[in-house]
Length: 87
Image: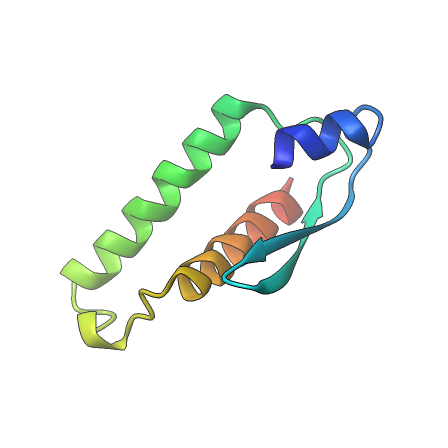
């Protein structure tokens, strides 16, 4: 979805992408550059590792984590937004 929206948007000039998850639209602000597939894969692995570590270290209780599709999508979009705002 991100890669295809960059192509349509004319070269990845950033902007807001509405991600539809479980009949809910979540806004994702794209950076003003092309995001590569390898970058998305790397960020996904980092996201999973951070959350696994939080659960195994007891920072977050397993029962407290929202494992619904919408809950995970919201957390991932927040993570992407944080990562892209750092650069």
